[in-house]
Image (spheres, rainbow, N blue to C red):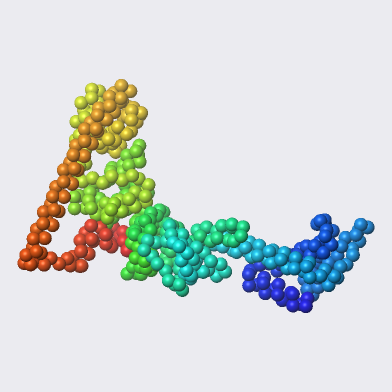
Length: 452
């Protein structure tokens, strides 16, 4: 029986990854609890137990007043104390297993693990891992992605929580770290730190921008991440269900980095205002929609990737803002042409910028007197209100014209369809081409940046 007990403990320790000595200690404590139950003792030090690690023999004793030990035969304890020992053992074994699971998966936090889709409990997905179940909240699942029972699930272990009764393992496919770990798995240079991921911006399920640089001049960071004929980046895109990945070449110059981040749009010029943390980008009219992207996605991700607020203007809009600023500021007595040039060089290119930076910047950077700076800010604020009203009217007028044009086009198409004289067919290839022109399709630019 004693050897059989050891075999059972060895099996539990092996299957549940629990230290064997810890199980034996729990068994000894359970036998002490049984002895106290049998003798109705409240003294935690009155009884002791020891199990031989080699033979499995269990010895229970009672400490006497003279310092000796009274050996208690196991059969003397009876059925009820045995049930007490059993309950204590089960409880302690479960605690040991929870602690073992918590320790094991805590070491894997932030790493990619692979499990099997088990079931959905409401909106959250339950994933079967090696020893336990993990759950993926709806907020950590990719939009529109559905798993069926038995499907392989590759995800990021983002949190391990010990709730007392169980260990909860939180999984994610939406966090930015998931993208970084995928690059480390697919691109050996990233795992070996030859290529470094400098920044990453993501809208899960739609698009991700990754800025990379190489510490070895012989290794092309963008080319290595894309792979031969796009093989490496294609594996990542397939894992993400078609999410677009833009590989951006990192540069310490914010102007160059912002221009790279907005690709595939071609940037004419970049003006930085460090006081406001804002970058003003000038692009041609035919590049404007490409730079902004669908629903502003391209410029939004570029702003998050670079850490700059980004405004995109056409050359005409840029020139009009500068002209308004020049006319407004030149009217103030005491402002020189040199100060106006320095103002533009610092990225203050509109009356709105002057209103935001305030008088202190004008005094420190342009060496204006406090009185002159106050007047400049005041006149620019007044002019900004007028410009804002004009822009609002122009937008309202533009929206009205667009609505009229759409209504007229719908009426024409309706009459054509009603007369039966013509049938309008929207070709799928033409629709894809239009999407590509608007910046929604993959592109490779001349500077080596890549989009998958």
